[in-house]
Length: 209
Ligand SMILES: [Zn+2]
Image 1 (cartoon, rainbow, N blue to C red):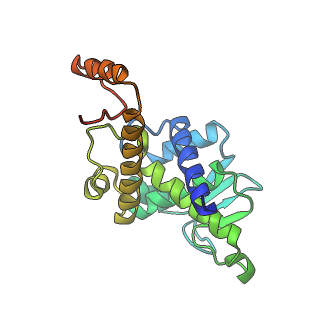
Image 2: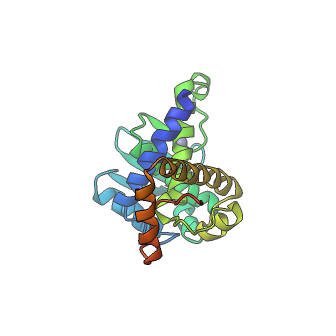
Image 3: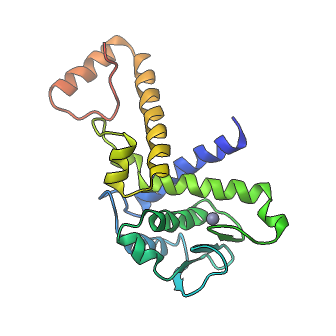
């Protein structure tokens, strides 16, 4: 597994845990002010503040003070449904949840050495995977829910890119789940099918014949 793939898998796991801790699994588009206040309440961050100007980008994470800075308008824009603002809000929460050190901009243009540092790039990508997984959390995708990018985009208010990335990840997860179940003993599968027939909602996808 490449280090990018490893970081991605880590980001997906942390994202699932974080959206639960932040109570962001109740609705498709949770209020991000509430999410940020909850992040503060549980000590994930010390504070989040809105500022008129940021040197670079729309958000910044400062690990020394455990503070997230957003350019004024970003959080309100997110709650009005702007997909890029929603992404930025979660991206910065990602730096906090993933334990990234230093000051991290949404678009990084520090010193040249920093800008091209491999570890900064990996952190940024990890925070991006995290943001996409929080915007479209696995917990909100039922077995019969469409995972077509257009539907994900409409339902969760994301950009095309986020919807496409998550669509692929969710499809892979579904395939893995049904692959695992195929290896289950026949009587277990029969038991689950019977349960499903009685109207019990299963979280795993049963093999189709
Ligand atoms: Zn960042």
